[in-house]
Image (tube, rainbow, N blue to C red):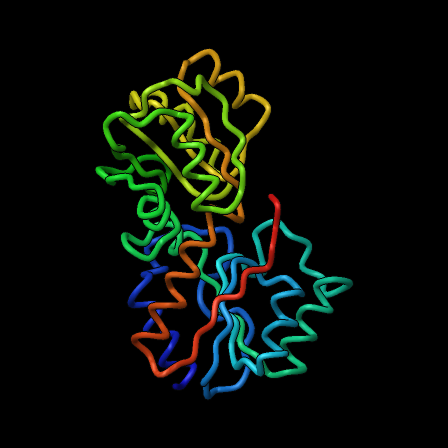
Amino acid sequence: MKCDALLNYLDGLLEPAKFHDYCPNGLQVEGRGELRRVVAGVTASQALLDAAVARDADAILVHHGYFWKGEDGRVTGIRRQRLGTLLRHDINLLAYHLPLDAHPTLGNNAQLAVALDWWPEGRFGEQDMGWLGSADAGDKLAGLSARVARQLGRQPLVIGDPERPIRRVAWCSGGAQGYFEQAIALGVDVYLSGEISEQTVHLARESGVAYVAAGHHATERGGIRALARHLGENCDLICEFVDVDNPV
């Protein structure tokens, strides 16, 4: 498959032009024009680049790529090493950030809903990145915590009464603790994201709304893994998801 053809397919699928993002979406580093094997992962770390080289990959597809707004743009140190690996082995780097959080079926938030047996019913927050929905009747916070640990492979940090009934839920993958106050105003019983801040604990205690911090990496594996599976099934590509462990 031609790299340009894959980019056109992904742009049609994920619609990056709809989003105001903090990094360029799509092709970030150009490599060879013909693609047969793609390695997908959450972040374009050196470990993922090395895994792609070992697998003789033609492209790497990630959620967290390079060239974030506000970064020092000089190509030195770790940045030089990463870019050098890509250029030396003629490997393309493709990245989709907010478009992969928001996609209605393949995105991180959609995949969280599938994993946790939640029914999406609406959106909220900046660019509608937060999701709103309902949980199984009779579910409690303790049960939700256990399910998160089982499904995401990571024990979450939970603020709230374990016996609290969970009916209305809100969630947003990654570092979206800033949406918690909006979720509280929507009348939910629990809000789940990847990260937690110091002030988040006080908001949870004082509002009575439970907060579940399930891990930035853990909450953002689902989207890129689903996208890799989709490409393998619908494009003339071998597409493998490689999970580089991250405890955060």
